Length: 315
Ligand code: PMV
Image 1 (cartoon, rainbow, N blue to C red):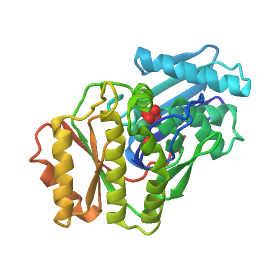
Image 2: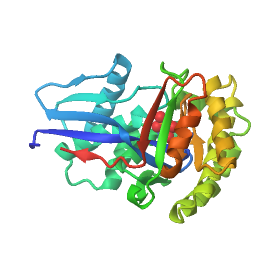
Image 3: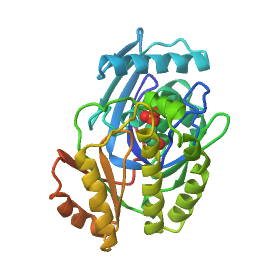
């Protein structure tokens, strides 16, 4: 590490209580709070070097221009002119509902602020990351994290992973890009779904149940509210016009499997973001049972095994 260059690894996160919808203002101000877990092994590694000229390496054209806009916005906020060279790499598929934007914008935020705004606190960093993507506000931290709604919403850690070390399995059921990006899908949902207003109105109650369940390490309570919140979010998407239906047949097969396993006493529950992949959260004693059960499901191209964690690493 030097004063002119830094490398940061930030982890993806998955929301158990989802952010879905914006409050209309600029900068990805969320319409709902959210609560997530960091994913220890799904990471973006980003290096930033102060240089004579801007450059970005490691992303496709669309992601490159989104990141360039984010860097310009960051410099405008702090009245900085410094050009930067950025190289970035994900160790998991991008744009397929695996939250690469969360780890990506968190990593670049931590690198830029380390070099150019070293006195900024974590709340300030989270707010900057949010401007890149709403879920990135949470990837500034590892473990159990919540977004607090305010005029300028931000995330904060609620419990370290070590206090409740759950496993996470990511069942990849679609390798190519999802059918619609989350910002576009959120806008469509808010404008056309007849159940969107109820989604927003009932959200704070789900947050409270999940916070208590995490505090008490109450797996079954967290399972019930997380699955409910996930299905309610997808309900708003499916009832949009035109409908947004991300799921594949394997997505539905895994939902059924998780519910059957839990009814039989295996501690597992599912959640699904804007995409077809299913994330299964398991008590570590039951993880192998879930892995074996997944072998019977057709259409899973990959199974990524990880756990709650994801503290950022700055080198
Ligand atoms: O951060 P975005 O704009 O990709 O939106 C994320 C939306 C969900 O993943 C579906 C939910 C969430 O809270 O992460």
